[in-house]
Image 1 (tube, rainbow, N blue to C red):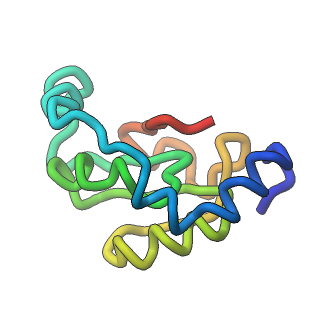
Image 2 (image 1 turned 135 degrees about the vertical axis):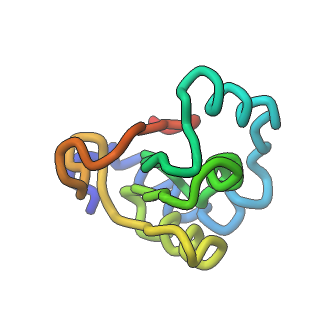
Length: 114
């Protein structure tokens, strides 16, 4: 699924999917408090990680809920995510074409995606 993804992004992220997980910095641990306190996420929340890449943001979401759907347009990045996080629902998609029903989620989060 690359019909709305810029060709340079498609090529770059496809070629670097394995390396991305290793070299991309993590997020500050304080993000968990922000997600809990400012967005009111809890164990019962249904959350989408949009543009999930290899899943760098997933541990922060998993600290709050197990109802997570990762959506990623680059197949190679999605494959890396699925290897690392087999318990997370992982779907191909973009912001323009989310593979989810209307009003099925409590929050849609984009962490460093474009």
